[in-house]
Image (cartoon, rainbow, N blue to C red; front, side, top):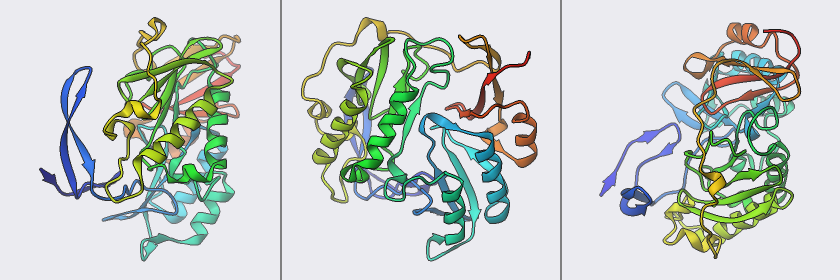
Length: 320
């Protein structure tokens, strides 16, 4: 069957349904008959109210200064707000455009703000991480793993060919991201090791955290080789005829990964180092300048955008 229409995440025109077996039974999936159009800065989505651009944040990490700067940029070039996405990224919309391109001045300003660190790889820097990793709970601190994975992605010319919807998910062992759809990822099983994940159903070997970024990058290169480059090339590992060919050998799921956590509760959260984090809501994920001034007033140097379209302010010294 074929469907039509469009979304802000990419065209839906030209889908063909297929049946995909999963651990929860057989579901209807899709094969692609067009290239993905997931937006970036240099490849905006053109909506009725203007262009929409997406800014990737590795593990949702940013700073109060970047958010305030982005809101100022939005006031000048977009609708004045910043939208938090369910992949812990940021979006601007309502942007003027010419022939499908935004003003180069906007691109320069976003680059100067540190929000476009790679023109060639901007679309593929899709790395989601447990928001509290390294702060409290979990089995391991995955912040360095995420940063090294991002650096490896950007440094590899071949990996610029990954689809813009391809997602790495790093769960620190608490299980807050275990149910997220993913292409490649890992779940920590102790402070120094994690089990690799391949698509939504398959598990790889348990590897040292020091080796994990290189392992995931190697699997991503394998996916690029397997998918090809035609109009109908798969976007996701689970869309391959046999997803296990990405890794070769699969393993049983480690018993230590059988954990799950509810979405992060709002309010003050004690950190392992004696400081605290504050998890604050952003209604409908829509951040305005006034709201940012209120929410970010107590923030330290870091802010984490969460997959629940909220903000985490870590490393606070003062009492709640």
